[in-house]
Image (tube, rainbow, N blue to C red; front, side, top):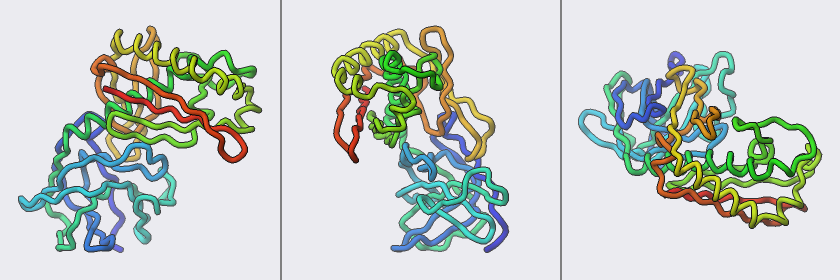
Length: 289
């Protein structure tokens, strides 16, 4: 391979919907498609380590020609091996590895390194993903609050001081447009930490009702949201920051978000308990409007 790539600079954390940059490299990915790696982008990629929020939709424009962005994924290289998307095995921050955003387009036409390129993002799709992601964070905090009395041991707490059930039990989280789906595993390890899983399942309807009531209270009060970053590179840590009940809450998050909880007309959750692998899982589906 050629010299190692530079880290991609990203502008989507600030809400940017357009960007201009330079093509660093193109990589064939099969079926006549290629990954176009830019030095800067406004396109949110699917993270390789925690792929909760999917890619933005939009166009990559090169020499005045628009190419629909079919996918955008995180990639990594050490100058010899290049890994893309779910095949990324290198951990962020690993010595000698550079991480970047790769834009997948349906074209095998040669695009020369150094060519200027711009990105234009679908604003409606971005907003709906951002609303789903913001509602997901708010719902996790509201759920933690309702489950606070079901712990018999001290565990780490969330930004509101409640035992962080979400962090302790989360198995998978998926962000969709105006929706998120979080799956919590109520296994032996959680019970050993002091959580009463049986009480949760037995009172599922009540927990759901109280979680929705608290979410509505927060939504009506409004809560400005910002994204704080340690830098403008793809791998720099970012935080979702808001204030609820006069307390600042900071959640590490690499996704995109709306700017105020009050911008939503509704946030509601539904809880479903099911058997899985000899135990229970609870799925929380959060809807935003």
